[in-house]
Image (cartoon, rainbow, N blue to C red; front, side, top):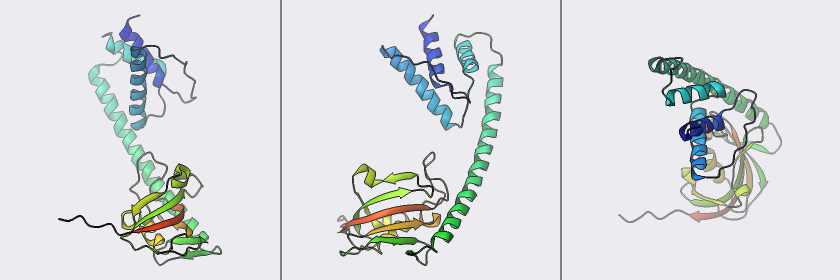
Length: 242
């Protein structure tokens, strides 16, 4: 078998996952070519996932890959290939947009329902902005202003308990200027003193809203919860001399 054919077959086979999630045959990377071949497969798989593919038929994929590379007779012309792909990706994009819009509404309604119920619980305080918080431990030190740098530990979760960000799990406190984070944090930490631990329940308009990182755990219009410990108020950064 030609090396180019071997490379193409392995690259295709390495990325293909069907609806049934069939296991692929494990391979060993013994040479540089093996590593390059495998890397091509991983790269193609990443690209396909980003474009929204959820399933691919491995045999058909390899047939199109190898027959075109070897300049064999194709089942569809190269002109038709472009037309097929253009139609498919247009439809896929439309479906993704519809799905995203539906998710925005679902997340917003879920967050509103949760916060409405949550504010009735004992110990929950709600501010005029809609931020809810619970005092886990009071502090005795300084209270920050919006322009101060602060050091804190935090543990962020979705409403279902999924952890999406946590300095506690990284075992490294975060340092940031208070007016450079989400509105819920800017407001909430100004209610705290050094040494305090609060739990924030943040509506989407005080969190990330619709502007979330694609593929991340935080979806558009999600309400979020954070357990925050204010370790230190570090003061306002000095403005560099002009």
